Image (cartoon, rainbow, N blue to C red; front, side, top):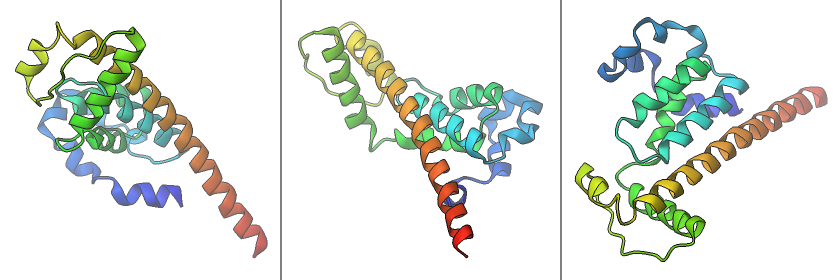
Length: 169
């Protein structure tokens, strides 16, 4: 069940191999383990993808691919999960990351107006930067761990349920 559900949402691996930004990985993309979907590859892909979804840097997809390849986890899934932070979800996610950082550092909240631009990021590094970056790292780590253990649990539960159904028949 979990495997079929995840496969419905995955992009075609041939389209991913043709991405210009991923050409830097060359023949590494031909490793069959990057395209298999099993419990190990899914939980690792969720961990990698969710981690980079919360890190406020450009080229998140390339970074997720760069980490998915040596860990040999599902490449399409790790790249697709980066899109949790998209232009619609970035402001609330990054605001929450900032608030987590403020709480972790014990600082006062500064005026915060998010813009999806490199200039905003550079100019805000001195005011909200430390809290924002720490909060992003904390949220990325927590999301990564929740994704890893959550998918592992859901996958095992799905397999157990399938075995129970088979044994009843």
